[in-house]
Length: 101
Image (cartoon, rainbow, N blue to C red; front, top):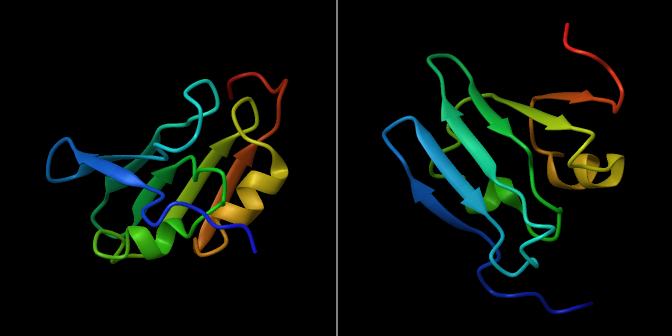
């Protein structure tokens, strides 16, 4: 098994309800901003990273509600979405080329 960094994710808390999570060991051009937005009944996670390490394990202290994970196909591949959002209770993905609805 390939060894990865002991701490794959880092985070910055912007306020009580919004947290930026990122993968500092990914080259900047491929790095994504993973946003956690706390809701009343559900939490929203926008993008889910590369799937190298468990996002849900890293963020278990802030993911204490059901989670809706959202990924956009311009920034993510199907494999990344499946691998990194497997613990979300609801996953939404939008394929390339679809206009605003």
